[in-house]
Every structure is written in C-alpha cells, then in structure tokens.
Length: 72
Image (cartoon, rainbow, N blue to C red; front, side):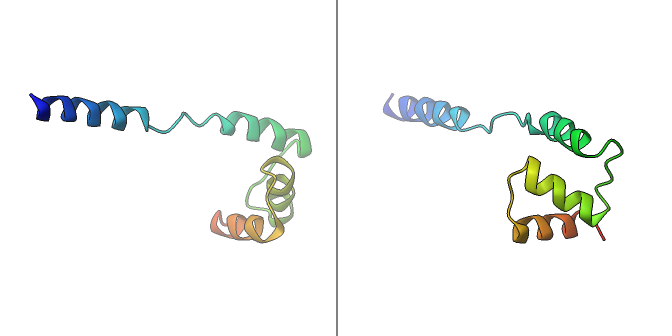
C-alpha cells in the first residue's frame, strides 16, 4: 500500500512539472513585424535588432542566436 501511495505521489509530481505552453512565438512575430514589415530572420541586422528589442537579449546572446539561425 505504501508503494502505491509513493507511486501516485511521484506521478502527480511529474505531471505538475510539465513545461508551460510557449506563447512567445505570436508575441515575437508581432514585435518583429512592428520593427520590419518584411522581417527576414536570415538578415543579420534585422535578426539582431529583433532579438535585442523583442527578446530583450544582449549583443552576445543575440549574435550567437542569429548565427545559429543562419543569419549572415
């Protein structure tokens, strides 16, 4: 009986730790289109500007992120 209670408690704990849904995509797209009507994430200057303004990133993290996304 004790194992059953521990198992149920562990299952409930695992379910409560599930990640929240990511809603930043729509917010990010709106912010990006507010800055650039034809936003191109492959353009380094546009990618950096959107990252800094919309994602509140730093120059280093935005540069890395944009490079990983293929911006040149």
